[in-house]
Amino acid sequence: MVRYLPSEASVTVQVVYLEIATNLTASAPSQVVQGEEFTISGQLTRADTGEGLGGMTIELYVGTTLLATTTTDSGGYYTFRVVENRVGTFTYTVKFPGYETATLAYSPATATVGGMVTPAPLLPITLPIAIFLGVMSGVVLGQCFKVLKLPKF
Image (cartoon, rainbow, N blue to C red; front, top):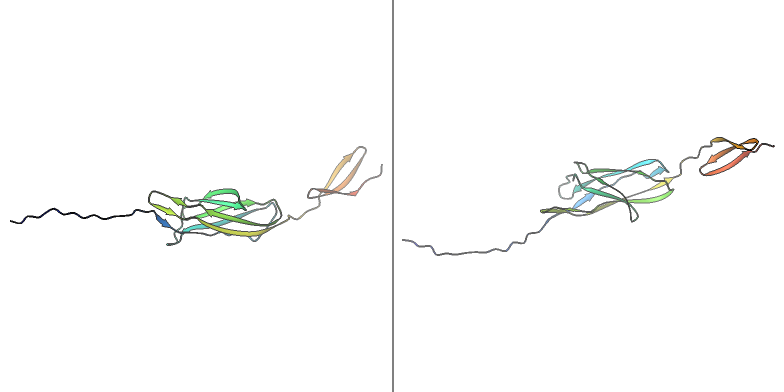
């Protein structure tokens, strides 16, 4: 008869998040007209496979100011619709703040686009303006009013 004696073994296992690096792209026109809508768009992907990450939150900043957030579609694509009312050159930054579940974590990512906003063309508009007994004509340019002709009373 054979008799087997008890034995044992132990192992130590460290459980960690599966951290996955991400890539975030952004594109926008380099120049737009003041007050006209333009888009900033791009894609969030896994760095290891290139697979688009759907359902993730993307943030849009100008400087340190958060302007808007959106969610990526099933392919990882996002779009922001922007109207800039100031004239100048601005840098917009899109950020993926990261995401984690019980089993994995996606790392944060940032992309930056910059461009210039030019003034909208000013078109002369002639408006009648009543002044007591007479009428004068003028041209409205932006927020300024220039008198072209003032009738004699």
